[in-house]
Length: 239
Length: 114
Image 1 (tube, rainbow over the protein chains, first blue to last red):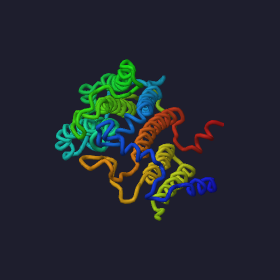
Image 2 (cartoon, rainbow over the protein chains, first blue to last red):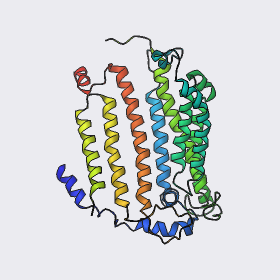
Image 3 (cartoon, rainbow over the protein chains, first blue to last red):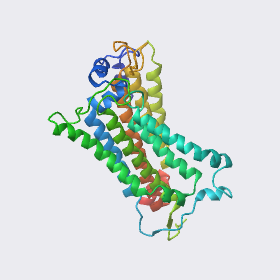
Image 4 (spheres, rainbow over the protein chains, first blue to last red):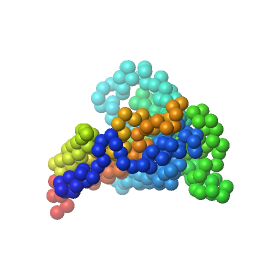
């Protein structure tokens, strides 16, 4: 294995002078062909559009897999939601968290939406912004009680968001097919590079991915939370 | 020629593998696997770096400036997504193992099976 590692390292290009020419090509074509300013977004949603669709489905499959693995097993019942944080003190969360937290939720949602919306202009996009949006939901859990969270943010809504995001990506791709061009080819006016509505379908795809990722990550986190908070083993485990 | 970025990638790979091999706790093992995978992020970004180049974001600059390779950056994004998916699934499996066997020590799990 050490020999294989050494062999692989010997084949690397010198640091600072990559040999691949594909990136240079994208750097030259991206601004003129797609009117986008973020070349990583061009790679993700134009050159490798189908790969990104698959990537989105990886996340969908993982969230489904987690939900399936953590489904209610025999001998388990959902007790009243017992927040284990209360074992560490009389009230959950510190004073500072409860005072600053609610203000941070709005800020985090705004930041997530900003990152999703500007994916074709600056570093960011659906994946990054979606995770920020999901972290806003986790922030709500930190500052509120679990039961409040379930009432304010029902899990089926996030499952629906996840599926709708994944479907939205496919719909944008199929729209190009219906217009007679290749799957995921651009179907919208390109606009002026650097402005918010530009780069054709890239912002739409970013939005779809953002909704999908925010839903998917929230579902995964909620499944793990449910394990520790709601489900109790009817038969106490043998020691 | 500097080799430091590649050295960091190799170090992350080896230190992660060491953790996986010597792990006595399944959650610890999953985290070590994440460390192993993070070496691929460093490697991918290092492969695409161009000396003195700007990030591949052209906000107002002329399009002919030298920029680092955007392809490997996009691949790194894919890598991160895959890692998040793998970690979530593995942790879900770990939860189920703990429910069934009541332990997370790989050695004790082997003893239980016999």
